[in-house]
Length: 159
Image (tube, rainbow, N blue to C red; front, side, top):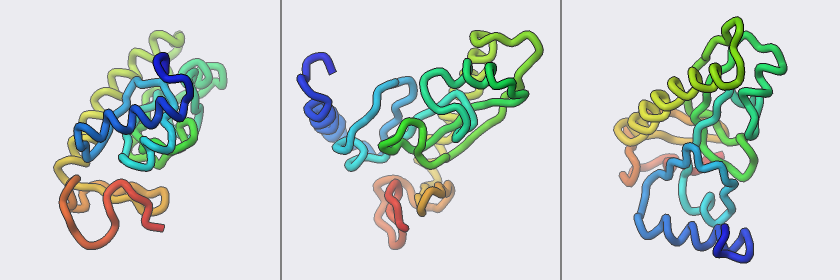
């Protein structure tokens, strides 16, 4: 946001820059900034999170999971909404917590799974299509991004 005096101006400028590329889907893995209504209202945005949402949202998910004493954590690929890690879940995968794990060792194992899951999920969304109904994301709908069809619009709530 450095060159923009307000969050709103930053969000509007970012939405404009994204629009220049005419994307069907925006992937913000590792972006670590809260997107505003101009971006979120114009584009479906996918993000990853190093926990099995809705458990342990926020910037310290791995540390929080270890402090809680969980035996299994994991990663989530989700659509971004106005909240912090509150968007509809697209895909998840579990990662066991091992005896002696610290934040760094566990996070490295989660990141390995997270990267693979993100590539697989976004690939499926592009190849097989997807729809969002309420909070349920369905992959493999046969509707790929940018393709006109009857029924729910990919990336938009239908309920």
